[in-house]
Length: 322
Image: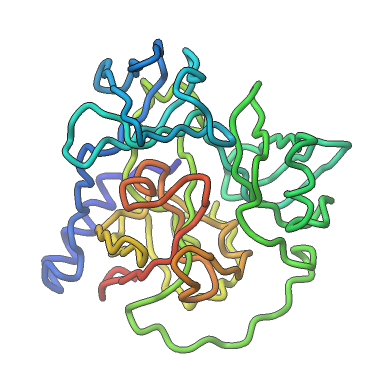
């Protein structure tokens, strides 16, 4: 994951000084409703989570939900599980929703054998091993019929033995390999406000999330990062007319389903998102194509469900950030 440098912070301050504060708004703190860490122990009525801020205990309610590749019972939480917890609305130490071992693999297939794929997510991230369990392979193959090198893959699942065990597809696979992507026609001019899909990614890859500050980072990976100074961003032309932004720039993002809004910094490149011109079924499709990938905790904080993989959003980029 890229880190916002002092130089990039200075760039934002300079933009604000020249063009006004509205040209470079400060990121919005997302509060403390979302907590992430490692399960220390779990009982029939509560569990303890080790986080970057220390240990925290959560109670269950009758309506609390738990997910690990599918719905599970609270007693199925295991010590050592990476967990993302959405608190109850009143801020009490009650878990409204819990996702255990949640993982995602988005990128281009570079190798396949039997029930295993190797995925290249691009932009310098390590390749991922994806396992297609028999019980979910049929569901995956309906929307990803070409599980062979050169084709795009995107699925949500769980971490297990260092691999992503796919549970459900996060999109419908394009019918052509990446090298044969049709040339996209010119898009409408950029107007400052865009509609499209927001997905999510895990900047910590599910590892040591109780000590790694990247696990709770609040920001976005962006498909059109300016290549000047960010040569590792190997994105292609997106079907959304995205302006180029640098790491450290900010954008406004509204979940069109929940109306939750935040100003978030660009933390990383989302090259794989530029290869997909898909729709998201949540709250009705507002526009084709991906406009960003939120970090895992930011996605939940803005009302997303990790198992859904996406929500429709309106993104506003202020003048002076491009």
